[in-house]
Length: 167
Ligand code: FES
Ligand code: FES
Image (cartoon, rainbow, N blue to C red; front, side):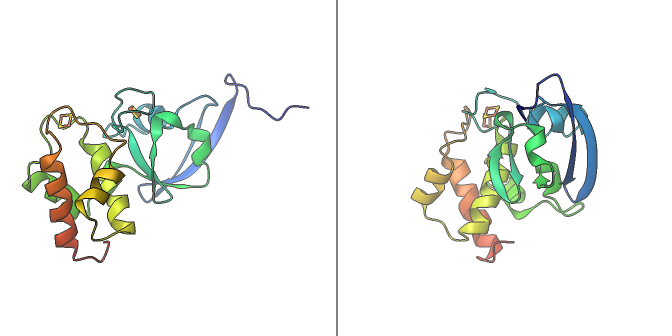
């Protein structure tokens, strides 16, 4: 007998989302991006291409950056998910967010949540990345406004402020 889940079936997803335990029962075919935006109302996770190309929908699953348009909500059952809304410490922006603000790494801002979450993951793994390493890590994120120079500067500034401790 097949154990495949039919899209019409419903699944219960239990996850730690931005530090809070949540449980939602959703159609089995619900994408993680839709789960976050439509069921948890976390609209900081943006939808762009919805074909895993632009990176606007990037979130962290167990600390790793993933494109949430390319993953089912059911796949984060039991996992820890962090969206851009979960990065700040109260009123204090995460250093990566603050650096993007201070260095003008964002213009229209549509791509920014995806870049910021992906950069948080980068600096956790590599607190002092070279420009080439930054560019390589961010190849899956597209920005149509900034020309990328200010984004690279924002990442370098965030790394300097975080003083290589990855926090
Ligand atoms: S919306 Fe997910 S990669 Fe573009
Ligand atoms: S700031 Fe507009 S798409 Fe990146």
